[in-house]
Length: 314
Ligand code: 3PG
Image (cartoon, rainbow, N blue to C red):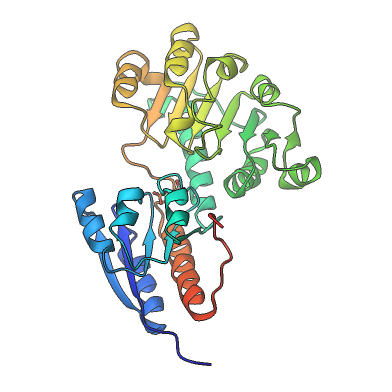
């Protein structure tokens, strides 16, 4: 078998991996004979476009690979999103240019699930302000979309002793039960039954703005919505209405809402919200290593054998 031709691989992470994860990613690609260029914490999109100009493949996180970025990359064959959600990549424009897009599903799921539980505990304990809070044991948890993160969350929830419900039109009842959640018939029922709802839907045209007053208003007393998914899924006007009408409602999010919504939430409902200062879900050493190394290995296999597993824009 002939040796794989050397390619230029760009590792472009506006939010960098840990140094150790980055070095391991670089080592895997170099060991396979590829040239690696690293672009971290870049100040503007122009820097990404410039770096893409000569790249045959790229590893990114939430970095924006839109039509303009793809147009700036005439040599590009493959973009690997080191993570789950690829809503920041224009997959249709990529396909039109013959560029394959992959993700690394499940690799950062545990990190996201642990963060969801950390945020639930933090808000239940009044942000550790010294006053009496509440526990999670015995409470009801609805998992809105049961993919890799949802399943990791359910595994943790069983240790907490929570009663768990799941809704996912793509997961059948048997698979839902084996993941640890009792299936519900509709998304409305999920919110009606759950004191806590953890969101894990991707941002798609169908899901954008889909979680608002009509669903949140159904939640039982002492409700908390936990968002480690995407901000676009939330109908922010509806969220603010729910806060105005329900003094019991709480919201924890790893993804900042729009500036205006964040300011309104902070000004009026600060005790009932928690917004991470930066998107933290996948920011653990383990998740950086898992997702980064998976991405590097997928690129090596793609150029060596044409392996197309994990292509999301076939
Ligand atoms: C994902 O989709 O994998 C998560 O949202 C993590 O995103 P990040 O790599 O930009 O932190």
